[in-house]
Image 1 (cartoon, rainbow, N blue to C red):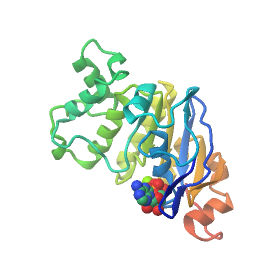
Image 2: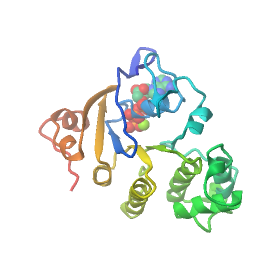
Image 3: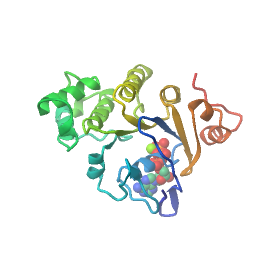
Length: 240
Ligand SMILES: Nc1ncnc2c1ncn2[C@@H]1O[C@H](COP(=O)(O)OP(=O)(O)OP(=O)(O)O)[C@@H](O)[C@H]1O
Ligand SMILES: [Mg+2]
């Protein structure tokens, strides 16, 4: 895919495949085109060239809600809840989507509570979104995506703004969703230590292009990635 904004090519001839069941990371410096890539995959932005195929079907140009109905859900770099609603109302909206309705639970309330439990927000259902602490807002963002019953989950910086004590349980949850529930995950992150432990494969981008694609241990020593990320080949990406 390629996508230009005026004179800037935000995503340039990017081509890759994700197999079902993979847990893959997208890495790259600010402005590399990572979020634009997610916007292209999920129908928030149309490509100037190229196509998106999902589970064998061409989904390029489909409306966003149709893409969600195909089983692809995303979170946003800046959480985007319905601000004037409670936590459970936010999740309920997603549970009412076509795939959300097919999730386990006899009633809408059961489905909402199951998702809240899954992300560790049980007991917080009645809380207005406006009074949620930031860490809980990030979990709500994940809950809303999960409630649509995705097969492929795209996470845009799920750890952003969180401390280590909040990141570790969230990383464990993502690992469990992948391992236990077989969810395919593609995630953007800058918090490298936790990120590199979690993912099995990393796609690295710079100036809109893929500059490397490999295992975390290959990526952290890749000279192109180190230069792009830290601006000097002598630097190293510490993940210990
Ligand atoms: N809707 C838009 N209109 C104009 N320019 C845009 C738009 N969306 C993204 N861009 C530009 O495209 C480039 C890539 O942006 P993008 O948000 O994809 O980067 P990113 O890799 O997600 O960066 P970050 O790590 O800071 O989130 C940036 O230069 C950005 O300003
Ligand atoms: Mg971004």
